Length: 502
Image 1 (cartoon, rainbow, N blue to C red):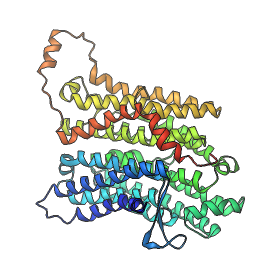
Image 2 (image 1 turned 90 degrees about the vertical axis):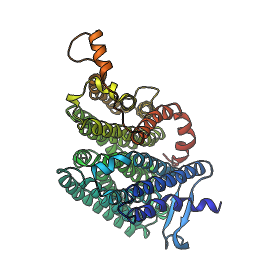
Image 3 (image 1 turned 45 degrees about the vertical axis):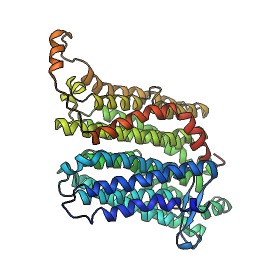
Image 4 (image 1 turned 90 degrees about the horizontal axis):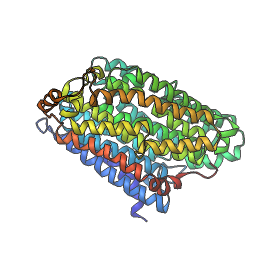
């Protein structure tokens, strides 16, 4: 048992250590920062998986920093929920870093060390948010990850600095609301420790300061999560950042904010209170439902693949919020499972976008044609599988998280949520199938004949290099594995994290 106590530190330290090491290599060792990022994220991923398996079978692990026990000291807590999110964060970072070997030097020449150091700071900050058991310490890690995220967005094209500035302003507002909420809760409970808060809050009854504090935290984190209508920063930030920056921020940044939402609503406070005392989860659910439709409609209107995927992220965040809004075991299963599925789907899709941009120099959907599937067959196959999963067709992973949300909506007799899920899946069909049509079908109205066959045969294959292709295809194949293994994941990893009273 003693060795397992250190797992939380074993997850957290590699990212910060890697961020320090990545910038000390001489400039002539160009691949050293990349190797550092891959190794340290891989070690953190391995520790996260070990922690996930351990907590699912034996319960939580607590680590007291400096040997000081709370409430005087700060603790790291690894329970089934935090271990699950750690595995998602480190896993996505590991595969995106592998993919960045040839992409980062091309997009940020001469700045590879700074890029990987900043990206590892982002990962470390996100892991700190997930692992800390202290509300104020969470704010510290929130600022670390946010500052790193702003920097990663700012190094994109000429429009990126403005997008990063808007992201910074709105992110600072969100962090300020979170900190103000923490102050209200600490003033009422006398502690920053989440466990202490969870024990004290029920005895306070309908405490106005604690309630206001929770509302402020939800508002601040909702902005970080890009929950509708607080999503305005997301589309430009994702679109104008460099390809690797977007590929690492999009799958995990908003998911960690969702973790804070789950932790605050269902672990620190009584689920009955946030469900009925103040209808906070209901509000979150309906905002998520509107965001699902809004993001899907805006995605349809885009002609650039990367921007289409950015608006799609607004929609997908809505599914997680909808699961939180159901405030039921099935709703939480759907929300948590969708954080995993969407992280893999969106990472895969943004890597595909990078592969296309690297090969053709653009991601304009209007210029796509059937030669793409000949030139880049594996990349296009990965896109197809990820697109089908985003739509929610079985047996891909995306179907099952939506299925649990459908079951939760039916169980709660919430037919609005049920209708939103079904309509949004049809909207997903519209904007993904128009891309698939360009890639796989002739759009000039002419029949396919021997001449066309000869023309297709003359097209040279120009697939991405192995360092880019492997993580892309692996993530796409994982969507099938996650789909087929969904019952195992739910039974052994997600059900143990459902809090009592939900």
